Image (cartoon, rainbow, N blue to C red):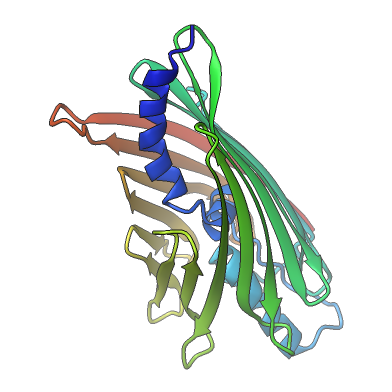
Length: 312
């Protein structure tokens, strides 16, 4: 039988790790759209003004944290798989003739063992251009499968939001609301506003999320090198670092996220197309779970491969 008391204890841990963490939609977009793949689209020979291209470049950087490429990308598809069944991820994106994101859909399932049970995180998300902004929504579920192969839902969340732009079409803020239901039938409504700031060179310098949920507010700084390349993103709980090869292609990105667990994700690109877009990447994930009672910490290691397909 399903031991509800034990899994309520497990739920208490995950509630901290996932509810208080906020399940931020921007972070979920990044999870669903691996950072090793830019979805910048170049305007090519289309009749697009310099200002339009620059605005689309900035907006796409807000979404994917990557520089533009000198190609005419129309669509991008990616698939992440792992032999140990840890992660399954698919993402599809489409762009208009001037490089603006039209539509994005993503689905991800992550399975990981915690002592005698298997925890499953799943998320479905979509984003679609609507006038001068983008509407987005996501559905998140956390469940636990016990030794008898009985699955129990611990948490569910549905979120809706929108990216807003100024009169020129440049993203300035995002607003979202989410409705969460937990194992003990607790329900909560959360609202948040994220503002995006630029530096004196017009680059994204900071995102600042203010939420009605405790610990969901987060401020992220963006740092660049002398070649105008993003090299670091940093908030109170998360650090992302990026490196590049001699041909100026993104080589690695590494994320260290600390909350009630410490998760380190290192992604390395192994091959690129002629435009410098990654076509094959390797991802290594290490999760450290600290024992709350002074016992031995648990360390879990996972490996995944990412394949990218581009349509021009």
